[in-house]
Length: 595
Image (cartoon, rainbow, N blue to C red; front, top):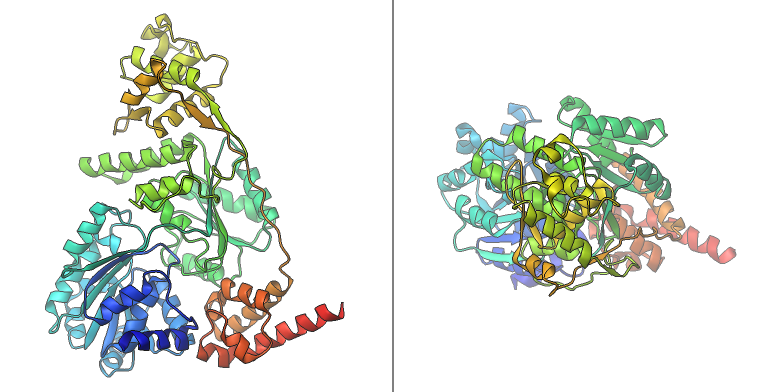
């Protein structure tokens, strides 16, 4: 009975005829009073999983959310759909916070969003204990674990808060990325009570992954933006200095760009973030300080200008593309210097020897990722333990390449033999210099010129040799020790290559052409959406997502009844905006028929 009611609520407020994968199971579990841990990729609709129960359960649903901008977006979106919601964070005065708590206690809100840092105040906790909290939803739950990629100590106060409540609510934890180790931490540190686990899979089929090596990064960015003049995107860089440099390069070339990093004042960061969310700028250039609080659904590309520090960070940052389910691109631009930058950042920011070793291990996973010729999607999913895989995804730079596998057994034998003759005691650069035949004092001082492998790859550049060594590491023929100065070691299967019992192949990658299509009506709908958003004071995607606009463009509804069948158009939005969008469609159809 409750589940049927949940479907009605979903359609009425959010305009969807049915739940997505795992959403219905999670909603059913929460309505039955069961704690849960849900791991769902970005864009899979995590918020629906607690927003629907919030409208059906008695009392208020408290949502722990990490960033102010994320709360505001969520609350704006709920209000647009006709749902009573509010938030409490540092942007409010003490008097306003008190007013909202009182309003919540009187049943004025169905959902109340709270920053985790608020739970560090005993006075605030005392005020909150008077609320009738039916459900506690914890967003970005991986932040509770020191082994996660974005540890937030304030998340450790959540369990203490729950224990102080008169009646324990149902507790639901949500995250997009969590290894087994992090999942165990979430359950323990948040005090989940025999939770149901819901892992919907980490795959985002609408995202295309690509790694580009050895290119002029600035030239690539300018050409990419020229090829995608109407798309919104994010460019991530590893350092503030790099962000400033890219931002200046783009603005000098006439692009509507913004920059975001921790070195800027709060007011500057807030303004540029708002400009991006409201479609006033096309490209955001940022460090990893930007993005967690961004719910912008029409990001069509995420480009990493430098190698990210670990797979969790990469997948979450890349996952900010295509939240509406529309095709989007995730491109990683790699150069060897990126590894040096990330090692420096680890040394400067991580002090625990155990954590430092773990960070080096995670960085090596990213190095392996950029050098593999296997399916990039499969490589990502395997890291997160997702076994529902195919050998060719058909939507990544490796799988879409027209190149065939090339045998490199002889080259591999040279490299492996060199590592063995150097007693497995040196790093990638030193091994490469021996193979190249370097005459540097470092090489001759160790008398490496006497080795039979000295100079046997002198026809290749040092960068090419390093790339080949990294490829063999990525394919498990070699491995690196976990330290600031890693040493190259030989894996058992490499011995079979040296003996001639096994062959090694490598795929040569090619760049994919960006598709083009007619977006005439879509662009007209986007213009109307921007006008309505400005009038309402909300981001355009909160009015309707790109996915909804594309569906309108394809189905061409000419009546309100037909428009109501479009995904993402609930009853409130249909009444508020329906006729205006229909007018644009009708005029487009009329003009097309005339021509």
